[in-house]
Image (cartoon, rainbow, N blue to C red; front, side):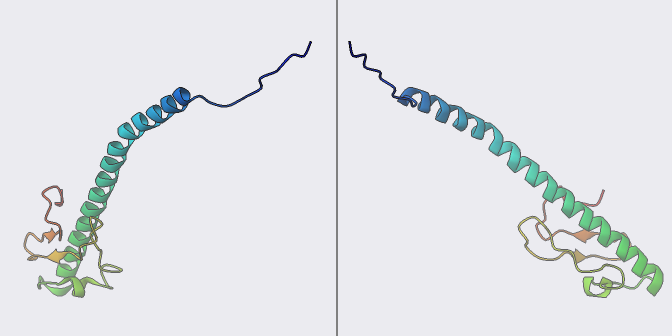
Length: 115
């Protein structure tokens, strides 16, 4: 009486396909959330850069008698270094007039404004 033991261990094709389907479903859910979170953080960084420039322009105007600053005038005395927009790294910001000074994002996105 010889008993034949069939000790084949492993996963079946159906089990592997189910696992792959679950991973695909999770990635479909997770990727848009990750991209939205990344976009929100870059927008927040851009808005904070605009606030930093706004404060530096006000300080420059107080120190220099309301003259028109450029971003080069603000560095390194009022801003450590010229901030670069994190959305696409498209360049530095531009500074408008001192009266109602508004820094402009190089991406010109409507949600990149000083609030």
